[in-house]
Length: 129
Image (tube, rainbow, N blue to C red; front, side, top):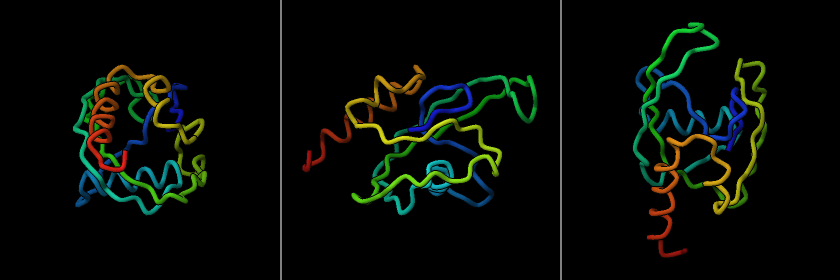
């Protein structure tokens, strides 16, 4: 998980580049924001839509954003490697591994709860759990 510019714990997100699928964009954003490479797509977690006031580019403008989430699998020996976020203009305060059992209580956004619940539902159906 990462601590965003509001000081809240959440998951990586960002913009989809021209010609890029949502899945590829999600994997790229995880790599850019958390330094985690070689992810394997497991499942789609759906999307949420949010409204917020921009603080950086369109200062004060009300923005409507759709956020698509995906469940990825990382290699068992994967390590978070803190990227040089400040050089890219990211406003991320921290990046950390969170045990799966702590994700619900660590997430600070109410609209993330259904996404997290879907992760648990998917994981409970897996034979290795």
